[in-house]
Image (cartoon, rainbow, N blue to C red; front, side):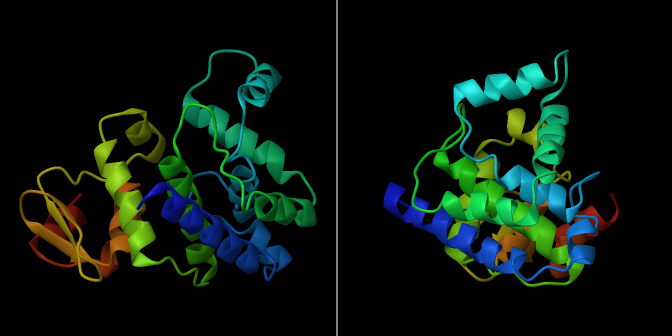
Length: 213
């Protein structure tokens, strides 16, 4: 994807996520998400924080002084935002559409990963569908794969996929070497970001390896 296509994919996924959020019941908002310790509402709160500039990032750090892990800061800031009224959470996510700002220290590709993966963190546990075009999921999955030995692996806590070949069955996309693990590219993206819920959607010799983990 070039930059224009990437931002178009981000905008489209934000709008799909907003459309889903506008239909949620109070029970849905309070439901546990796929993120450990986060409700659906907490995840939505986190998604309002995709355009942090240095000043706001520093203010968030000062709000929670002390030595904390990146995951702790992410979880806590998401919960802080979750205290906002429901309509404001939705409006803030919608309000980012059309902007090419992203958080300090990351690229637009991390922004795509964030909206795609966390959208599924919201939708899957409450039994809802949130479509993601295979091209967008493949772009996000490629970036996660490229960054598997960086800070991103500490944030997402991926399953042990080293020594496997991941192959999408809905788009021309594959990475790795070893026993083949095949499935939709969105499921492979969620695997790369540590979501075990997708294991039943994957097949091939590599699936047996993961089921034993």
